Image (cartoon, rainbow, N blue to C red; front, side, top):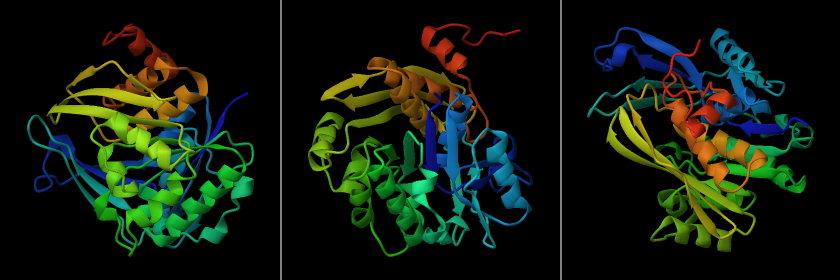
Length: 331
């Protein structure tokens, strides 16, 4: 039977400068849509997972375009809300060589940030779901978004649904009077799988450690519902040349993936979300070392694709893992 995954989070319009131009140079911008959790849902939908995304859009042509973007990529939009708010934006200047990429966010007072928690019947939304996914971006946006996330996790835990959370600490997002340490521990306590590193553990959970393995042990001691912890390791040689690998902590054992050289990166936005989607798929369908290898390979392929979403097939991920058809012209 097809697995069902539900994700929750804001979708933004992305405006990217043309041809690697700087903000000061560009007089045209390419439009994409994306959001950490929606990117995960789109990846999973490509892999024969029933993926539903819970979000809100402004009731105007831009909101409808974002809504259609999710539908076009196979995501269930049944529970999407519309209101008279505004679309959150972010602007991207892609770096090249030794020049770093830059992002400017414009998401204040967005439709999603003002979403009413009473609009959602989580028992109904999560009925027959196998998995629920959230990120630390959602509770950082606003008090109402944090409340929606907490209510969703509470019901998911009650129903025995596996919950994953990408901690995704964003310092500049926490602007509504609450700190991560006031909100995040309660959400992690209702989660089973988390993605994060030492900085995330310290800023969101108050846990300090000397290395990833020690951090994982401390997280599990404090949050016994968490049975799996993962993260990526990125070595940055330049904006367009990175090396990527991943680690997976489960059953008191640390597994490390192959390291990939990624030269001539097309677009690194969404790479972490592609990893998260690969991790969810791997944990639903694979075992042991294959889980982390699949997640990292999924992320590597995303770096070759323009836009936020990882539009690759299971066959393409399998070919990369096996070393088949890499860079070939396929007819």
